[in-house]
Length: 143
Image (cartoon, rainbow, N blue to C red):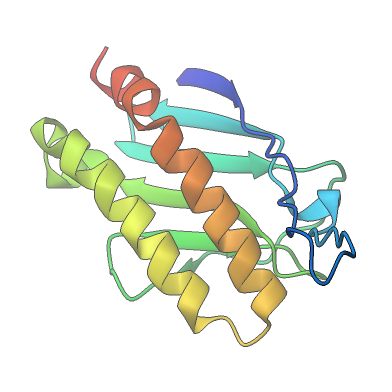
């Protein structure tokens, strides 16, 4: 099994001055993925991207997204995005670049499906980390 660990911590966004009052609006640091652990298993042909946070939350089982090739795993208590899994081999290793873009798109669509806006924001942060590290993830699978 091939593995890659990527630092993915994001600085909380700041709101500009409003009527001479500086307001700092930020999501809890517990909702920012601090690390991505990517694993490609050539035996099963699946790529799993685990999003790691400050704490270890128990996970629910994998659920399908609107894209039937992409499954996500959420935290049992917070609903944070904990993992994404896609069967790369089944769709052809030559399509890895397309698949990583599709994974990010599936996460983005799953974010809009979340009833709680904090969960949607967490999914978007995870999706941003995935897009920023797309080339390194593709290199892991194709190496």
